[in-house]
Each structure stands twice: as structure tokens, then as C-alpha cells.
Length: 606
Image (cartoon, rainbow, N blue to C red; front, side):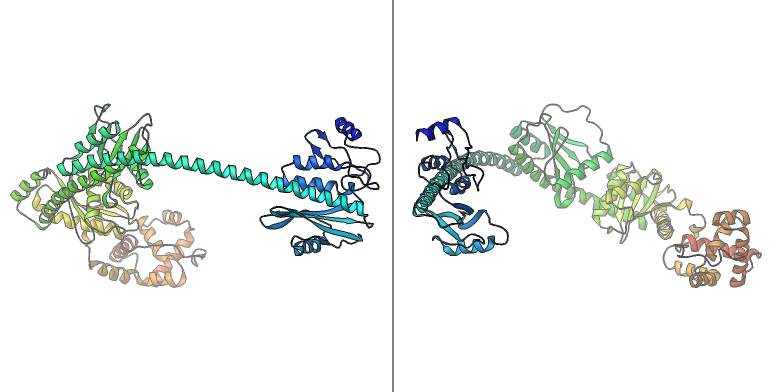
């Protein structure tokens, strides 16, 4: 034993003539707390002198896989054995740590599992002797060692192998017990941490409930007193300690409580303000934008304004957000009530506009308009607005009214079955109202008709018909969307809305019907050629250049038009009717439309 100790202190893992860890040629080494474990004597002369060192190494290890590996490494040191495979029991299943060759591993796995905790014979090709040795402990089976030998072991070798198996099983039992104690300690620590978390959460909930009760009490007092927006901002300021403000739908200040109020309050940029409202609306809850925490006042999805906390240092916590959300809910009720009053005024305004469109006495019209702050003594224009994607209801009428105000167009508003009508103070700017409405509605598919000027209320009914005519011409033109002014209609001022378009279609069919039918059958563009010819004043060179064709091709097409149409282009009256028909076809009836696919049969004609 002194020799083993000297070898242990030398920390030399190899000795001449010793056995390797897995076969002849190398000596197995087992790590221990004191250094390298001295090797076993030669397998030809098995002895139990080295078992204490192996035992120390096994029991110093807390990893079950490492214990099994050490045991397998030293099997060859207790006899003419070879460790073929090892198994550990993991979650009720035997998991192999090393397998035999791929052709035989499944058979050995099946044999080991069928033993069900007993020792038993295993068959490994080329090895006359093979055993599966169960590693059992007080708590049951820990795993298996599969051992083979080329010769039949002696009784002494059996004893040494059995001792190694018992030591391995005991070390595994100790490691399993240690692991379970560690797991129990970790679980206990987790439970204690969870209990502490629950206790903190309960304390936080008590504080939160107390704050919520304070918020509800403050808002309930406001509701019972019937006070307005300033009372809301004052209460929210007292609850949060932050400056509070209310803005209307367009970014104009309605109320401010707390320090730091700008004077004068900055004028909002309509486009940026609208973008900000859309950002907050998409988020759904209070949103931080720069130094403000903003919540929308939005009953039934329509934005009436916003409630905001000024918080440049980002001090707002969940209690602040709670107070802001509930104050915004209360303010929504308050502003909804004010909105109902505004809707009543809007209805009275609409009745006035309805009377103006139908015709009413001037004295009454002047008096009623002054009550709404609208001056009928100034020049008025009638504007008709139609948006196919939006029903012409009260909501759309309010949208049109807001858009008109945003572009500086004071108006009285009413609605009809499929369009909204404004009596506007001053001539509308070209496309300003259209662009604003396209932004408000989110779609550009709208048409606006504007009348000529009106200097007295009794002229408004006639101007309304002009606005409708301009609306209809714009809607039926090639560019259907945008603003059409009656002043710009030219020839089409004589064309009215309604069933008269049937007469226009009959007129176009009379003068261009054969050409239209021919174009449809043969995929040609004779009508468009004739229209361009008239637009160019009968100039061959300009017409050919506009159509991107050769002059000879143009002459052929015009000759073909004369043959098909039976109308003489040289005749002044025929020429006038043909020119009017092509203009109506192009602008009023949707021509020329998409060019047919494929080549034009007449484009390459001589």
C-alpha cells in the first residue's frame, strides 16, 4: 500500500506494463481529490489492493455520467474484462452512455431493457462471455454495466468485478441523493423567492387599489358637480403633479392646469397634428410623443380632442397612466355632451342651408346666418361634394365642414342623398378642399363641383344647379376625381345632369356609332384618331406626331373614316357635329379608354 501511496503522490498516470483504460496498451486513470489514482495491477494478476483508490475516486464524483465512465474505464483492471456499454436510468428510461458497434447495439439495448433490473447474459459477437450487471441502490436501479471477456473469469476475478459493481452502484446512489438534495434546495429557494414576490405583489396591489380609489373618488366628484374641462385638468394635475392640457381635434388649446403654459400657445401644423393623432389612435392607449403623454378623447371611434400630461423627465409610472386613462374616459363623456350641442347647432345650420337652396326671403336668411356667425352679405359660392366610398350622412357632413374650416373656407353645410352641399364664403382655392378631404377620408376617389359667384341669397338655388352640373361633368370625365369649376366647363355648361346623358349617348351614337363599332370589332382607334385630328385643328403633321404615326397612315385612317361614317369632313355642319361628338365621347362618356392589346390593324397600312 505504501508503494501505491508513493505512486499517487508522484501523479504519474502511466506505468510500464499496465492496462489501458479501454484495452491493452494504456493504463486507466481515475481523478480524485488527492491527485491521480494509482493504477491497478495487470489484468493477468487481479488484486483488490487498488479498489480503495477507485472507491475514493467514485465517491468523490457527484456526476452520475462521470461515475459510470470511471467504472467502465477500470473494468479491465479487475480481470480479463472489457466494458462494452453503460446505461443510466434517466426519468424511468435506460439511456446508453456508450454503445457497441452499430450492428449489435440495438440487440444489446433490447436485452438490457428486458432484464428489468436483474443481472443477465448478453451476447456480443466475438466474445464468448458477456454479462449485463445491474447497478442497484436503496432507491432502486441506477443503470447497467455490460461487460464481456474473451476467457472465462476466475472466481477471484468475479469477486473483484462484483465489488467494483457494488462500489459503482453505491457511488451512483450517493450522487443521486446529492442531486435530489440539490434539486430540493433549489426548489425550496424558488418557493421562497416566489413567496417573497407574491408578498411584494400584494403590497403593490394594496397601494394600487388605494390610488385607484382616490382617482375614482376625484372623478366621481367631478361627475356629480357637472364641471367642465378645466375641472378635469385641475383634478388630474392634483393626482399626478404634472401639467395637464386639453386640445381640440385640430390642436388648439382648450384648457391648461399647472406651470409652464406657453404664451402664446403655438399654432398647430394641420398635417403634423393629423399624423400625430393617427399614431396615437393606432396604438390604442396613452402614447408618449416627445415630452407629452397623450390619450385621445374618442367616443365611437371619432376623435374629439386629446388629454395630455407634460412630462419632460419621463416621471410617469403606471399610476400616472391609470389616472390619465380614467380622466380621458370622463372627458370623453363631457366632450360628447358638448358635441351633441354642436350637432344641434349643425342641424339648425343645415335647415338654413336647405332653405337657401330651395329659396327663402333675404331678410330671414341674413338674420339666421348672422346667428351662426356667417355673413351672407359677402360673395358666396355653392359647393357640391361627393365621395363614393363615404355615405352622405351626418358624419361625412361634419368631415366636410372640418375640412372646409381647415383650408380657410367658412361655410354653411347640409347634405343630400348622395352628396354634401356647402354655401361657402368666398371662392374656394383650386384643389385645397379636395386634397384635405382625400387626407381626412384616406381615399382620393372624390369629386367636387363649384358654382359661379353669387352676390345675393336669392341666387343660391341657381348656383346650386351649377354646382351639381359641374359635379356631374367632373364625375363623368376621364379624370373623375378632383374639383371642377362651373366657370371652366365651356361647352359643357349647356349640358345638364340627369337623363340628358341618354340623349348625349344617342347623339354620339348617331355621329360616331359606325366608327365605335368598327373599333370594337377590329381593335382599331379610328374615333381617337378623329378626335386628335380635330384637337390639332386639322393639321396633318401635328395629328400624326400626336398619334405617333406616319402621315400616310393618318391619311389612310381619315379615308377609312370617310368610307365608314358617311359624313363629309369638308362639310362645315358635319364637321362641327363630328367634333362635338368626339369631344363628348372623350370627356363625358369615358372615351377613349384603354387601348386594345395587340397591334392596330391600321397602324401599318399604306
